[in-house]
Image 1 (cartoon, rainbow, N blue to C red):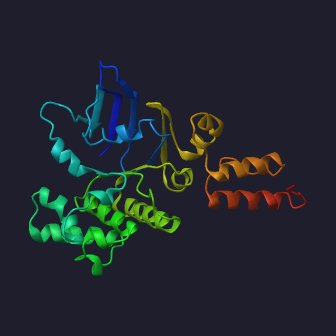
Image 2 (image 1 turned 45 degrees about the vertical axis):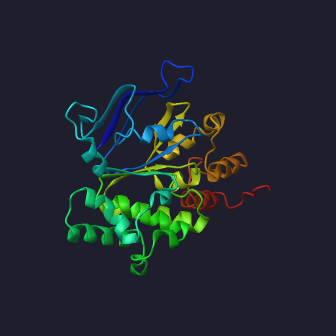
Image 3 (image 1 turned 135 degrees about the horizontal axis):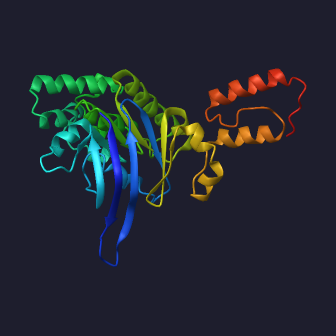
Length: 290
């Protein structure tokens, strides 16, 4: 269920003194089953972009296609689209409102017209998939920790069985352990369900670790759209946009400058370790200066 944007422009307050072009002629494709990252500085257009993916915002010009159908076509069912393309906003726990966890997660399936039995089945399955213990099912969502609330909010979207899961800064405000747990859970779901995941993040380490395709937004325009290794090879250009590559990129370049024949495109700890050990094996006598 691929999503495609074709020359999409979005302008806030057009024709007024407050006119602002949030998206400028953006064309891209989000292929089926991929884990896709979107990064960019504040005001780069990331949040505006993802709200076009399920029809929450309408392009000022251009087209958005889901399964090769224009979602703004005259007879297109955008309500149904939102069951296929689920969007979890930043700090989604603020959207929790039901009396208990299981009822909250049932809300989406209920809107899909499912029977009580089926929506309970969906909700329980989704909660298990995101690691929420059954002992919490009948608790108020407001009694949960920040990480638990985040999991419940994600489960609420998963219970609708979406083909595409869009996450806007899902780890914002969480401690490192909570962040890793959420992202590992999402990565596991992506592989198990084969769904497309779109992750908006400000963490270069996170996108380097998890995503297959990385889209960089800059002042409303698409600056890069490629695998992370390729994008981070342009780290000096990213710096000019107010971004940075993962720390591992800088470490590998520093080692290269010291004479160690390492892969400067390594972006994760695992890739760096393999490259360094390989280089040391060939350069046993090399002394790396501090």
